[in-house]
Length: 391
Image 1 (tube, helix red, strand yellow):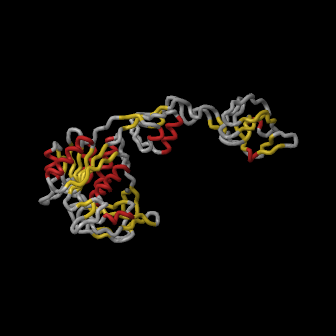
Image 2 (spheres, rainbow, N blue to C red):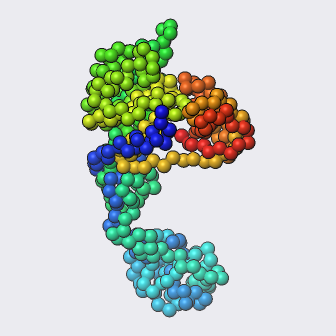
Image 3 (cartoon, rainbow, N blue to C red):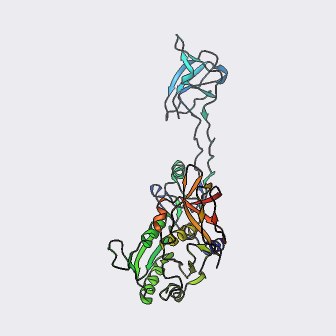
């Protein structure tokens, strides 16, 4: 039985980068860059005013200034400023030759002759200088970074209208179990609705990947085998939920092996999620996830999601914060670490949620993250400083 860190290392070590494709600028949000992005221009491309005011020579600011032109944004200045001259200038407009500062319009007034008087004590330059932010040829975005809204703005600024990005992983999702019915059905006696597949498909989409649902496979060798064969052909990753434990009808591990999947591990020292399997085949990788929904949810978040991003070349950064435990948490001593869902309240306080175990998916409705109780511990006391791993 591996520790979580050992399991994660094995999973990430098996990731092989996917190929790349170009996408339209409007469609690149959330994608992972497959190349460095270089600016084709200086930014700003010219000396421009940072505000509305008067462009002038700093040496003249204590003298009355003659305004010789008005410069709107996008228009080339027509005059070179001489001694005791200024130009009224708008925010973003090019600074005229001869000027080395811009006086804020709020710090000026006009004398009876229409000349501009500076009322401030000191004058900042209030100019964004050419190339002050970026020089042409400079790298503005690095390969394997995930594109957020601010990065879209940078891509637009440098004219990268079709950025090269990593292909999104295709992920097949299969549920197994005689007890499962689709959510549209009212469960007959001793049956439950299949929540795992819809949860996993949503998690796949949230990880900027593409899910395909292959339905429910009853606990029959041929049903699981048929769906797995198809999913392995059509996807980069396959997620099987259920049938990975030690029961008479837990058929998934043997069927995985029969389909050429080299099982790299079959248990993790973590609660919930001990019987998680991971294996590698010729063209795809496969996770066998526990059937209980909290187990499946957690194992996706801590193993599958980092793996999907690694396929795209991106090292997923997990947000952790320090908080103070709001209530006692008690667990049975175990050879596995226990992951407990919590909500964050009043800033830096962690409230353990009512949690009945790995089947209690409702506990996740208010969860902001998990805390970890170490192997062998009986719990944590109120007031303990804990590390919260955010969802």
